[in-house]
Image (tube, rainbow, N blue to C red; front, side):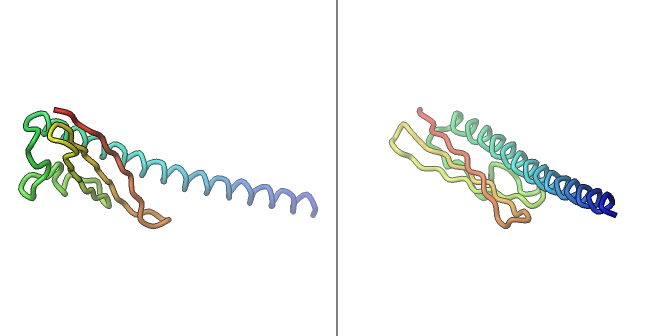
Length: 113
């Protein structure tokens, strides 16, 4: 009986560890997806800045990425600010919701003319 009880406790501990590992893997995959999305958006922003430094980065008719191309459950915002006439800062925020609630990944850079 004691052996069965010890075995049952060990099995429950292993199941608990496996469930934690699975949740951690899903969270890491979501964060990786947000990172890939942010880097892709930043590459598009860089291409637009190189084409026309002073232009508005994103307009309703010309978003960095069409909403139908975003992974399901993800959204983004792009913010452009001119620090000087020759330097601008681009900030991208990728948002999604997981079991812990709303999540956000932020990526920013500065471009000089």
